[in-house]
Amino acid sequence: MSENSSSNKSNFKSFAKLGEEVAAKFLTEKGYSIVKRNFVFGKGEIDIIAKDGDCLVFVEVKTRKNYDYGEPEYAITKSKQRQLKKIAEAYFYVNGIQEQLCRFDVITIVGEKEDEMKINHIINAFY
Image: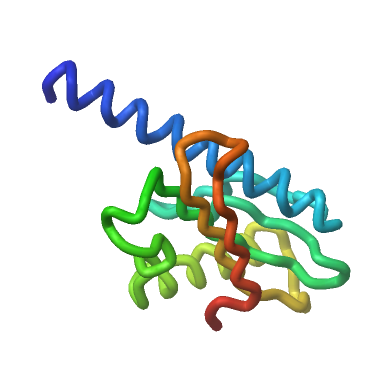
């Protein structure tokens, strides 16, 4: 890997982390409580796990600098949805959770500067 591509990858990761920070702050301001960030299982990850009242919410965050590659929510394919469901099931198993109301939300963020980012929260985005 060239030095330039490794710095691009680092920049992408730090930009994605900024998006997750913005999303967590957004959710907290809406009254959600953050339970876990970056829950990793196998090769997958759930960005944010939060509580909205009695409901456990698994949140996928997609951050883009612009719309050059289309709306960010379109990056959450059926395959990605299946992967997120499996990771959520693993979260229940690892934490010994039997019965729990839950849902999957998506937060998309577009913009380069935090104070100019456009946030879209899709509640119950998929099953």
